[in-house]
Image (cartoon, rainbow, N blue to C red; front, top):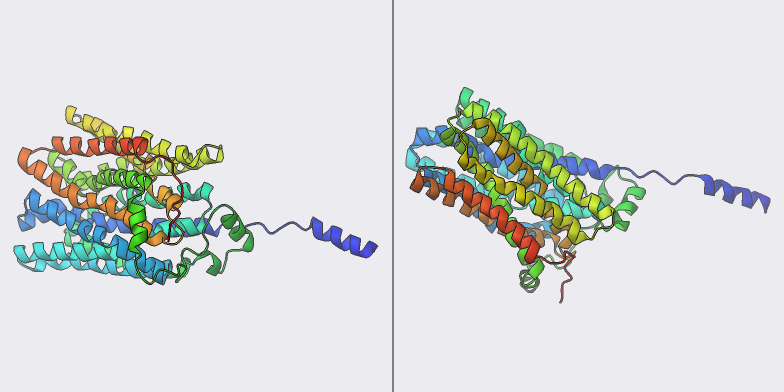
Length: 450
């Protein structure tokens, strides 16, 4: 008996295995790929000024070319979410990365054709690129829901969402240098090749939680006990994924909470698409900077947006850990961020370049701080259709990618100035804040009815 008792005592003194932290490596990989994603979208804005001069494109036509990506990206969200649910996150996102990189590369060769043909080809290639990128953010949302517990999810989502700003910090100066040194065509070629190479790294690093060779049971238990959905990334995890369930989609569209979230995301994405399309042109044409100057000046607002994005996610999770409700923890940084973003309108009332850059940096910081939409999606998506739910959310967000560049193009063409454009973008931040304050209500996971 004493031997048995000694054995039991020895077993009780053996410490449980320390949990691994593979989930942070996973979100780092998502961050790298999403940075490439945003940089590839921004290639056209960096190349826009010399491209307009070479091809004789006016502001309205350029606005339509800017919007081509988003027409397809918005249309592809629900089908993209469906194929994620049906075939698995890793496989679909790897194909997505490879294909959008390929079509980025091909844009570098439109200069060999006549002006009319080049314009059509640019629109078509940007359109196909948008289709290829469609599963990317719903897939990221699935990764966050699968790999992270509730009280870390906003931080994880903030990390890959902040990649938009890192793309500005790192790639805008790099792409501006390529454009000024070698020509606008080489921006597309270099970025396309880089994305294709990153595809092979993605395949090596990314796995679903239960399939990852380096994760231990302690980390899996930690994720699951904290509300993580370990199977969400798996092929066939959703038994109903063989077809799009329109009855369930109608339930999502009838949710007042989600309608408010969709409106908010549309408005917040308006800020994103201004920065990704017309902002470099604003610095060059309205503020008289060179292409290279605009690329480097954009670093400060980009860095501010990145810091805001990380701090917003960390602050939201901090509020949750301190016992605040999920609703309070998610809404608070969004409202603060949108107030800060609306300050960009002040740029219309100063000619001092340093002040303009400072105000835009504050607006970028606010946009990043309030960019909690994907954390909200991970919190609210029904477990049966995480991909489609994220795709529907991103559809509404990226309709602004269609409307924003076109509306701004018409404003510039009609007024010869960016003043009205800044007012338009700033007011969208105000509407996003109002939507989260008065429409969204309580934030909670949707329970589907059969």
